[in-house]
Image (cartoon, rainbow, N blue to C red):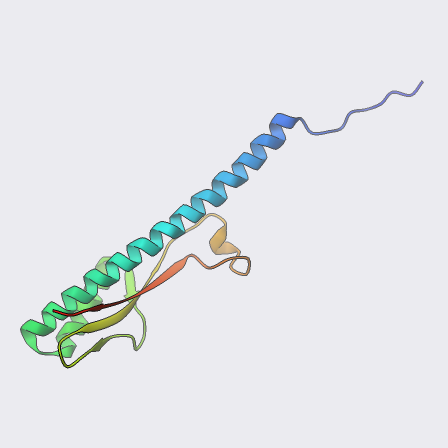
Length: 124
């Protein structure tokens, strides 16, 4: 008589592993979604501060310095060559922010990286 060995993995363990994977990927997706929202808000704020600074000083260099300070304070950076001041005092810039993720940022080929960009124009 032959004894049959049941080598299958218990269902609760499989369910726990699947649930764990879903939670980690969901956490990363929420982090990236919040990153995109905060980047857009930060870009609008920084552009507004720079436009007000330009209005007060009439200097694009002072406006750029204000924008860079605001970006650094918000853990962001202004994208190269994206800052401009129009004749009417409108400021346009692109802000870049990054976040840490558990999985998604490490598998960049499978999905987007864990950074976000947002452009904003503010007219005083």
